[in-house]
Length: 406
Image (tube, rainbow, N blue to C red; front, side, top):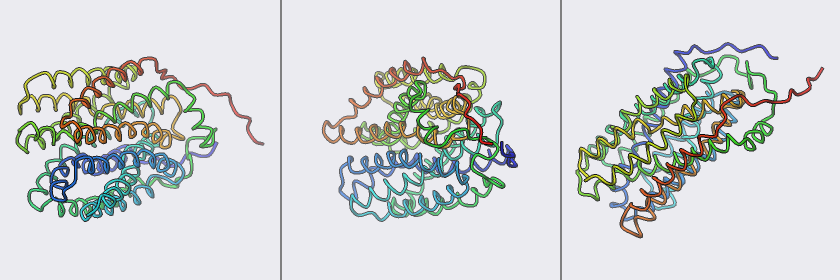
């Protein structure tokens, strides 16, 4: 077994990792604010904008697998540098996109690739390698809470930038902000990093992947994560337009998204803490069931700014709280040697759900003039996800020891 490489301090990992996730997730949570100004000025339908963001989520999921492989093989530092550069290029390209193809390439492909290299899968790999298992779920909760704080911080900031600079120059300002990920990535540069340093790899990448894909509990985690992506991205992107369509003031949408981010700070942190003491599958089932219930209530009660704010606060508690629980479960079952790669793979399911949620929202709105059908789908999927998480087995997988070479 190779000698363990020197580990980064927990405080350093959490501070730099949280700051990176705050920026990366904070920027992407505000994209819904650009839907109306861009489509109105460029004379596009909502499906055009929604399709570009759907591509973004799908590309994020697909390339997240390879970003995870690279981070496991070469360390997170190099992946984060590349992700930061792609983020800036994608935002700048989105600002000057004049055709639907350019919008799909910039907001879709480039930003999707950037997010795969600057968000949870890569950051959680560093956490898994440098923080003891006894605190791993808690630490992942802290990192997820940072992403939520990013939404609370960045969404109002993005709304202010749009009002002050216009939607185009606001995107340029965000492109510059994305470059701040580069100096923060230096704090996650693992000394003397080697492939699997400190974590003996008894499997190749393909062996680990085959094992996970054929393991029933991994399949169920992926199914639940699909629902998570469908719900949060549909709400995050289409909620601002839904509220404006209902006659509410524009600032209600910004406050709504900010409240989701603020309360998710508490929700994700609490999920990480509870995951250290309770079965994570039961917490996940509760989260998905609660989402279905509260979406139903939101649609039944009379719509008002207060009902929106209450709904946003409750959904915020449930928003990204699935992230630390899902990734910590993967680490518990399979270990951390391939955590970034396996985390990226299960996240692909999340992003396929995201693609469907954001695209169906735009597609069905353009054809029916309403978001009602997609709301109903989100409720049904929430109930299904609650059921599929219950049979998950969280115990470490039993492997037959492989013969050692002399």
